[in-house]
Length: 394
Image (tube, helix red, strand yellow):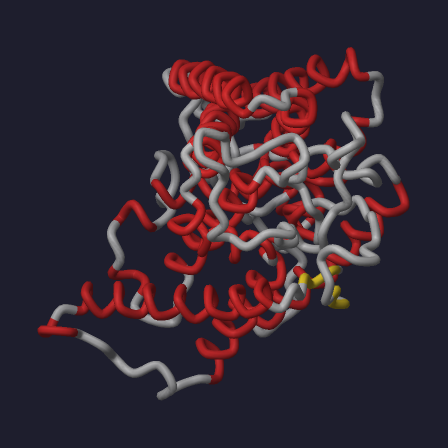
């Protein structure tokens, strides 16, 4: 990985997704209508400060300005990951900050899809998003880093993990985006339908979404050491989430007026959330299998988070209050790699370095203290990188 110390002068206009170093949220440059803005490594910071306010009576964003709401959305995903994955007694945190054992949906389930969605937005806003060699190289780097992190965590060679999942979904989505544009949405819907059908046809019993013996279990047991929620079929179908982000990126590039953009994002979010809830009456919502209902529902919630950020930041001008999210979202992959590696080292070799904390005798309170301190630590690191205009590029 390399760092780029200057966000404005002499930057490379590369086309990687946000997780691997792209300015995914930039609208067209001033004076070049319809052109993609120069990308910043790892979702780099915009030229202006996070607490800068728009002129009175004007929206916070213009076509020549970065869509900061996307940075904030990425930052929000990182915050939830930090809260859920901290060196303290994270098991004592509320149930909504844990993934369900099998079926169901919690608050924590919404944010990995949001991260993948942001990858997709970058693919259609980046100048080199269609460069096959560039895409494959970046995906390969993510794969290698992911294997290294997983191996560090498990103290053995680990093929699967979050970054490997992102890399695979990214490549599948890229392959779909190589098709003629008129076929891309039908192919995306077809992927979702084929996934559903394959699970139903391949079910050994009456329940195609059971906790054992599903098509995903059998495929992973054939290709991998065993079933994992970051497995083969889940990676394949989560490309639909990335593609949803890619289609959204096209809307962002085409719609200069932020109020119109907000209306479109909110409308699409409403439709998809409703469709996901309807699907949930037939197919259970399940993150570990990335079921069709989970895919559609969380694509809708990802759009809703982006719509909320657009309203808060670009229209309401809430720059100061959302600045910490922007700082984290400017270097998301670097922060993820840093905290994941640190957490693995602490858990595997740091006995005694994480003392028990129980304010007032409450272990739950101690869990929140750890979560807050851990998040604050990594926000500080992100803030220092942001202020120094250092954006880690893979």
